[in-house]
Image 1 (cartoon, rainbow, N blue to C red):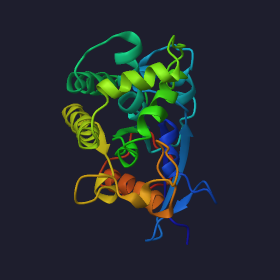
Image 2: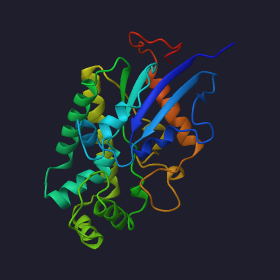
Image 3: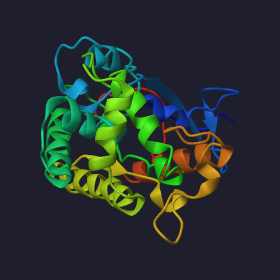
Length: 264
């Protein structure tokens, strides 16, 4: 007997690799026998702002939309990690923008959901919240690491005029303590959830599987060397898959869907 298949394309930045099965890639068989046929499209350094632009140097929007399959039941957008973790501080240090973080996050979520809602596609649309920051586990090294990302213009197409030492010095004045970093990631996700609910767009995150009692990312998801990507463990992959499956539960398939699928 053939098993039901749910075809989903996930468009996101490099953090989206948590959805990949490195052995089989696709499809992924869940524990109850149902199959998620995941088409994971990773765009390194991609941002919400880059996706929203019709044209950009990185061609984020064109490359992302070109990867959607005709028989996908749903499309998931998984951007925002680079904006919150790197882009905001890039704006502060390089652009001289002193917008408070909460105002930045609210505006980012508003623009993001507007861009998702404007997509002219038949598939069900969902947004995935960002992950908690791994950099909270590296209180001393985080300045130099983030400075490296900013100095090489991670998530932008623009070169900076600052070297890493200058950026590191600047970050020490504006970069928050770990507890505030955790709050900022939660704040953006909450803003994104509210906007999605208001516009009838699906939303999910997997924070409950990742965060410990103190609201900090569990150490089992942190690499042994500083990196803003999480450790690619089976636990992280399964939490990602089940978070997506739970988000799709009860959503109707879009009109014109031809592939046999079960929305779970």
